[in-house]
Amino acid sequence: GVFQAQRLLCMCSLILAGTAAASGSNVCTSRGASTCKQCLAVHPSCAWCVQEDFSGSSRCDLKKNLLAAGCASPSLESPTSKLQVIEDRPLSNKAAGATQDVTQIKPQKLHITLRPDDAKRFTVKVRQVEDYPVDLYYLMDLSYSMNDDLFRLRTLGRGLAEAMSRTTSNLRMGFGAFVDKPLSPYMYISPKEAVRNPCYSINTTCLPQFGY
Image (cartoon, rainbow, N blue to C red):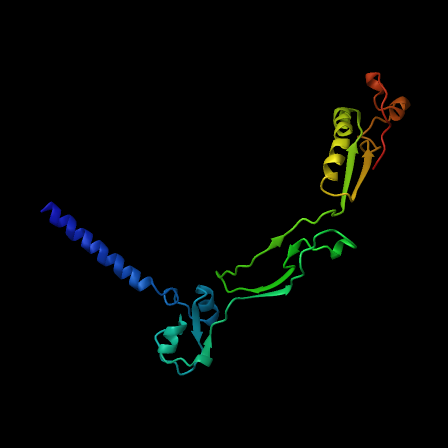
C-alpha cells in the first residue's frame, strides 16, 4: 500500500521532470521570440530564418533545426562573436627611452564583438620592467595639529626611498605643503599676532597659513 503509492508518486515525478526537460531543452523556441532582434538575444546558439516562404513552426531555432526545416543557409541570421587582436607588441625587459615605448602588458589593443550572453577568452601577459620611472610626490598639511604626521613622514621618507631603490633606480621624489586656506573661517584674522602665528592662543610658534 504505502510503498506502492510512494513508488507510483516517484515514477510520476520522473515522467514530469523528463517531459519538462524535453520541452525546455531548446531555449531558442522557449521564449516566444517574434523578431530577429529578440531571437538573437535569447542565446548565442539561436538563429533566425528570414526566408519569406519558410514554413517551419518557428523562425527562431537552433541553426541545424532551421536547416532541417527547409531554411536555406543564406537566409539564416546567426552572427558569431569575434575577437581580433589589433596591437600585440612584445613585452619590454627594461625601461629605456620614452615611457610610452615601454610595454608591460600584452596584447595592448583588442576588438571584441559579442552576442548577448556570449563570452570570449583571451590571455593577458604582464611583466614589470626594470628601472621603470617612478614619481613620488608628498602633499602635506603643515598645520600644528599635523605635527605627529610630519614627524612620521620624516622618519619614513628615507626608508621609503631606500625600499623604492630596490625596485627602480629611476626615482624622483617631491614634497608640497600647505597650511589650510589663509582665509576666514579657516584661520583667525584677529588679533594680528594670530595671523602671523596661528598657534598664538596656545603659547607656541608655528608657521603662518598659506595655500598650496
